[in-house]
Image (cartoon, rainbow, N blue to C red; front, side):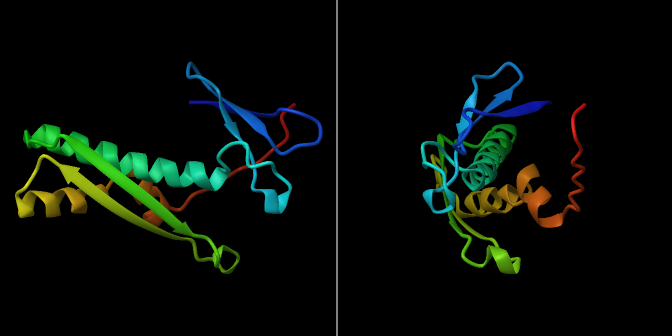
Length: 134
């Protein structure tokens, strides 16, 4: 998977992200750092990835168990006020429609903490190499 991010103009912070065969998405920065807030910022996409991964994981698990899960709702709220001090807090509220069994609901909630993005953010050592493209 290759993602290409390209500036959209000379002066702004708006960028276009190309992700293989998918429709391009746009990323901008908050006004406080000079962006126009015309699109989600990188933090938004990180939080979105976590919420979506949890929802998909719950659906996959319920499907495999043949549980009557009809709909998953995920609300992601972040507190990045301490990010400069190494603390990035994300609170997630989940709803599962179609299941009334308390044990199944508890299991679904538990299994969402095993989604790949949650695990990547909480248990992995992420190694990033940045270089000039020649």
